[in-house]
Length: 463
Image (cartoon, rainbow, N blue to C red; front, side, top):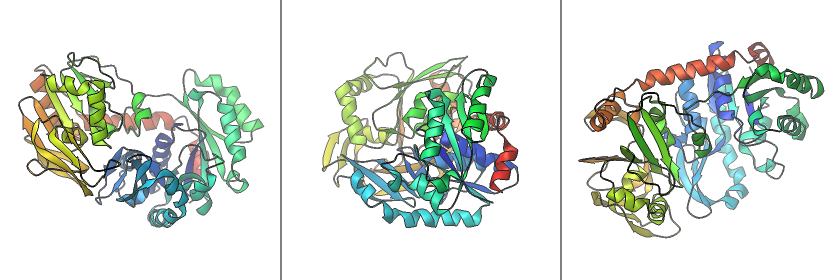
């Protein structure tokens, strides 16, 4: 069986979603399948079963498929760094911080790691479904592209194009990408998926005819736009979430600072029919909210300074209701934050925090990566840690009166903790089973979109 590359005809065309849909269809047909992305650029990451770190999109794809998670799924990850640099994570571990120009100059040095990981998956699974990045035909970057052209050429993958009709210009994007691909890759294109169509799908029947007859590209399907509030990969996908709580009991503010990370911590809240979540990115009044959450941050001191510049710092200091702080937000709650090795900043830096917690945070060179079941706030909570900051007295969590803080991500995934916590804020809160919601949402989403795809042509084209 051939491996598959998922190429978008533009950025944010829906490649991450199509990757797990195609993979799940093949898995349901009896094949063993793994997701893969050679290089991802995201501040949103997760700790794997093997203790490594990968982008959340590949972790979520593996979770949907029930595949063991490891660095092989995403060998190269770039996260926001100090100045013009990025934190470079190779095969699940931080290697260095690199200037973006330097990174592209040294790209060939990363190809052996990419090949090692792909080869490992290729020997273990019948099919590897490879997510591309952005558009595969950015002509000035094609020789610096690990996720699209390199993988498709090196491994002769079959190619599916994904076009976002919501952006407009869908015909030009399909025609342009197809014809700008190198000739040897055009021959491997098995079809195009038109994604995010709103309204009556039969209105695009003439569009299908044009693509198939005039462009000579098979159409694998036209997929309707369906809100999917899971697996948020980046801030763009976060902004697209849809929430309509019918039995609202709580208003929750999540402070959306510039380098906010690990948005997935809030998927259970967005899914909750009793909760309204607002992402606050300016100095609005916090008084209407029952709970204020300070989320994770890739650059904690920079985000702390942003809070001070906007006036939100003072608001949070004076806020008398409930506050919850996670990872980077937790670090901000200490007396001082000391980046003595310039891990996150251009130079060594010390900044005063909120002083809710009587201790200091030191940013150490070695990043803590941990995934396990924790004893937290009176519950057993499955979660993960991913941080440079450490403290002496409260290395995991701190709780006092109306404040809860922890380094551990995914605490709200725990039904018992979430229900107990929210009931303490609003006694009439009932709660729900997030795991069941997640399973039903994924299953319904896949089954709805599978019905719109030419599964027979797909399997025949890669067999």
